[in-house]
Length: 200
Image 1: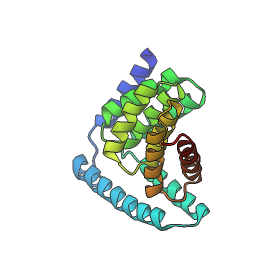
Image 2 (image 1 turned 180 degrees about the horizontal axis):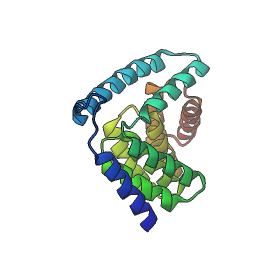
Image 3 (image 1 turned 180 degrees about the vertical axis):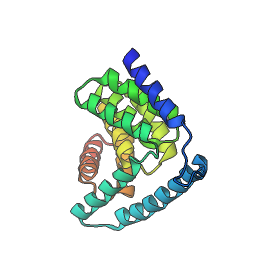
Image 4 (image 1 turned 45 degrees about the horizontal axis):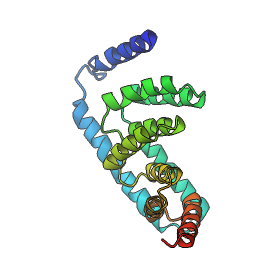
């Protein structure tokens, strides 16, 4: 843990150093650059989501969803991107506590970055910490209501905890955003059949 804190402190120091252009002038304010980046990303996402909703070819829809995921992973910060990579590596190794250490830092340093909350929700889900996962999913969806990955996670938790109608509603929300998501289509069909059999 001490090593982790030392690395984070070094990264924070590096990021806080002033930057200068080749001609010696100070570049545009970080806030202005970040705002422009956010606007450009939002514009690309709006276009991709419109395409995703219209697309009726499953493979083509998967490609569009992949491009959306790529946009979601752009934090605009080299530090955040690095910590996200470290968290993913730790999660892949099932070193969940290490992954959470990094993701706790991500959401603290960049609380408006939806994918930070979503990644932490995923790790909590992998640890069967459903309440914590749902809390992070809620934060994700407040920042990006179209996050079909977070909605799918919510639906899965609801299904796993026996709340079938709510799970069905969540999967229907997924399909409203991403109509060709095969896993959500299957879940909607299965849950609808189960609920019909139960007379609900």
